[in-house]
Image (cartoon, rainbow, N blue to C red; front, side):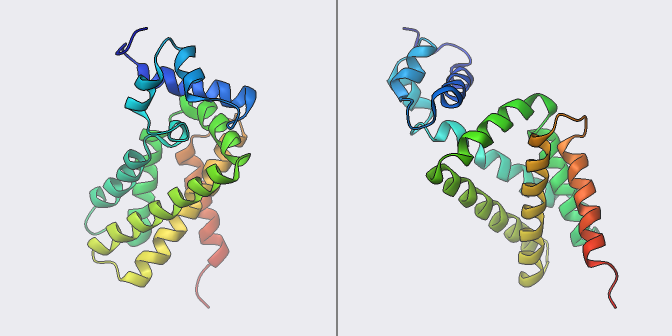
Length: 191
């Protein structure tokens, strides 16, 4: 068996996703995933600590993309504009159209397994905390930073759900922009 073939991580992810969709997450073993792409179980564990991490690989990179978006926003930008910048920067880079089918399948698998769903929710909590910290580093007050971070995470979560539910031509970033507009309409001007 080939141990270090190029693209092994991606092949393992694709094989795992296909097997999870066909047979369910719990029914698939690491050995089956590795064997399906001509690799060993040991090679699988070089890339992923366990089979659930196949679905969560890259979480740190995604979080970093959001945080970098906050840090790279113009210094004089409002908190709302900083978040808009971060959301657009991260989603345009991380969620191009060609990832929609993968994201849809991944979400379906996670939705069917309570432990995976709990892990996904923890990922969202971690993202929100990282956004809040990055906003505070920009000088945003702790309360405003937390509100803004929680709001941005919710907008991302809702937009992501809409993006994977449809096959229209809207990008995830465009859906986020529309939802931010909706959010502004929900609160409207102060009275």
